[in-house]
Length: 289
Image (cartoon, rainbow, N blue to C red; front, side):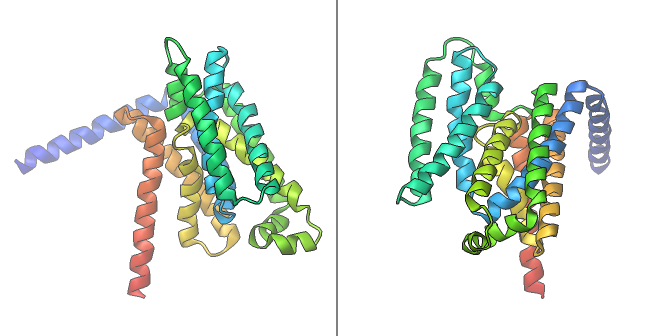
């Protein structure tokens, strides 16, 4: 009995290994891996600042409100990606403007705007007739379906984000830790805030095709949260966020391809498992010390 089980496990390992090699030969899988690396790096870079600046709810709101852009694209028979980019950009800037110009708390403004956008999105989706495949793929993500255009857009957003954040890293860190002191030192706080929101909104838009509207916030937050558990130096924290973002994305799409799981949930599930493992290891280490 034990011999049979061992043989079965060995056969499954060989079969899965052969399947993996075969999968990697397909262009769609190669594009998916390239997209996973780019999006993982992008998510790690921006997610680091999202986590430290407590903007996770903001990215959550932008991601869910993108349903309106997706529905509009399908209704107008346009590529949903081209509707997502301008919509998320405008939505992110408008929400930040409302937060700045009202006496309400940012969480209240985000809840109100998110609820309104979701209501509009649901109504628009009910007007869509016939096949809704494009809508479903954007809602739940399909990194195996990304094309060259998606890769170029992701690379552009990554380059812009890296240039903006890394060229002003000292100012960005000060703005993150103490906005009031940054303002006193002459740092253009508002300009940096709005520029970051623009980049964050664009990152959400390009990542939605990979992980979907429902999980895009987790894609930004979890890798940075894992890195934060084991990093106390900002530079190391940033590098670890990028590493966790890209490696978990690759692992997620490989699992998705091998077992025919949905790509978005597979990526986020891998990230969640890694987070739980690292969290448990940190707690056990602290108790042992």
